[in-house]
Amino acid sequence: MKKVDIIRAWKDPAYRAALSPDELAQLPSHPSGILELQEEQLKDVSGAPLTIATAYTYANWRRCCP
Image 1 (cartoon, rainbow, N blue to C red):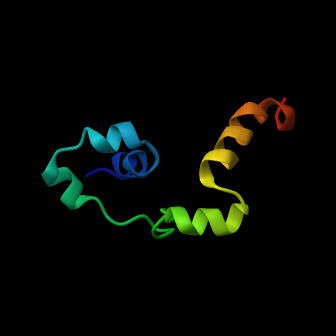
Image 2 (cartoon, one colour):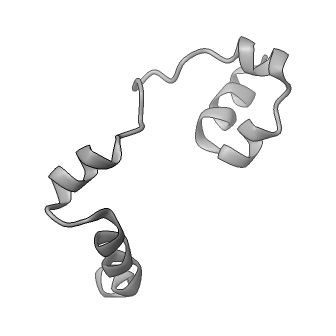
């Protein structure tokens, strides 16, 4: 697997989902480690239920970014 394809698989979930089982087996682990958090961990960090934090972020995303 080429380096470009590895990086794309790390960054692009749609591309990663399209890979065959053999290609996924060849894919090295991401250098930053596991990127997934459990819902309980997210609640602890946000201080609010996940659905509320997500809805607030979605509704107000234009305020922070031009």
